[in-house]
Length: 328
Image: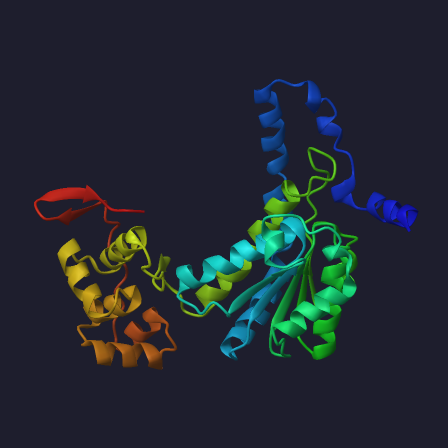
C-alpha cells in the first residue's frame, strides 16, 4: 500500500522537486524570499487558464443560491482550512446567513487548529459529514484537495453525486483523482513547490484565489454589489460602521452627517440607505423597490428611470468641525 501511494505521489506535479530551488538551504534570507516570490508569480497564470471551468462552477452556485440551497466546501488540512476561511467571511461581507456557505474539514472543528491524523484517509467520513449537515440534491459541493487524491474528499464527492448534487473538484494537479468524481474540475497546476510537497505554498495560494472567485462572483451575480461597492456588508464593528458610511457617501455624494442620518433610519443597511437617498423614497417604498428588483440596487434605480452612478471617490469625511480620513 505504501509503495502504491509513493507511486501515486510521484505522478503529481505538486510533489515534484523544484529545479529552481535546489540550493535554497544555502541562500541568505533575501535570496530565499526572492525565490518564493518568483515561484508565486506562476500562480495567477495557472488560475487564469481555469477561468472557463470556474465560470461553470459560479453559474452552478448561483443557481443553487437562487433556489435557497447551499455552497458546501470540503477538504482536509490546508485545503479544508482555506474552505473554512472563505465560508466564514461570507456572512459579514455579503449579509448572508451563516448556513449559506458551509465548510467541512476532515476531523471536524479541532482540525482547523491541529492536524487530525488519519481523518483525511477515510472515504466514509466524507459522506458521513455531508449526511450530518442534511445535504440535499439542490446543494453544490466543492471538494478541495491540492494533491487531488484525498480519500475524505473523494468519498464526499461520490456521495454528493449519488444524491444528485452539482459537484466541483478543485486541485492543483492535472492528474487529480477527484477530477473524475465531479461534474466540473478546476485544476490550476502550479508545478513543484519551493519546498517539495509543501502545498500550503503555491497550491494553497491558487486554491485561495479560486475560492475568492467562486464566492465573490456568485455574490455579485446575486446583487450584493452596486457598481463595485460592497453594499450588503454587515456593520458589526466600528470599522465596518465607518465602512458603511463611506460606501453610502461614495455612492450618493452626501456628506458624513447625512449618510449617518439615513443609515440610522435603516439599521446601517448601506444598500437601503443608498436607495433611499438616490430615489428620494421613504424606507418602506425603498424596500419594496429593492425587493421587486430581487435585491439589485442598480436595477431598482433603473426601474424608477434613474441612471445615477456613484459619485467621485470621497477622500475625506467631515465629522464635526474637523476632517478625518475615511476608514477603508
